[in-house]
Image 1 (tube, rainbow, N blue to C red):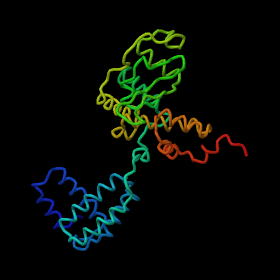
Image 2 (cartoon, one colour):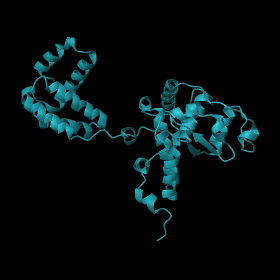
Image 3 (tube, rainbow, N blue to C red):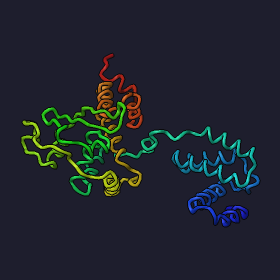
Image 4 (tube, rainbow, N blue to C red):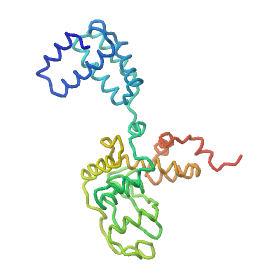
Length: 296
């Protein structure tokens, strides 16, 4: 139950933005439903206990928890003195930071057994081919949209991925692909049977697909919803690249460090520490990879 003085305060927020009013109202409902105290009796420990309760009992994500933490500081600024706010700010700084790969830790990616259904749920074959290059080859969206026939060698089952911008991760790199996915891409491009099976080099030139990033993002969510992924609204094409990496590790963990180094090169990571994140997400112990193939 929200205290009367807080209700009166919320009703007086006519000059604030609708978003601020909504954030304050939502925060007040949840906070006072938990603490069951009037504003004057609230302590910094009450706020921190509230945030901990949200994560442990209400299963808030880190981003949700930190959003409530930020709102709590703004909200309490209406009621508490500088000493209270200074201590609250100090405690909030000690909260867990939102991790770079928060989406992955929250399970926002396409599981291995859903990759093929996801691709086939695309609105049309052009979108399916784009999804194939991301989910089967590990390309970034920008790389998939820019992929050309000149950079495909069907005989070697290899493509050259070319990123944008500077830096190691955006340099051209060779990416090894499987025959089935390559055949789907080349079939869409209208290549002949002999070119598809690798007996000859590709005679056609130019970009394979002509889609905008925004249209792909929209189609991505639509396909995710179609196959029943509960987090479809949060899924992005870049999460597809993560999905490729996780699937790669799960299928090849017995190959040990060879697989990890290959994945690093496939994704174009400049540091293998970036690649190591996928071991944790895939539920694979680092020891399993480092010890794979080593005889006692």
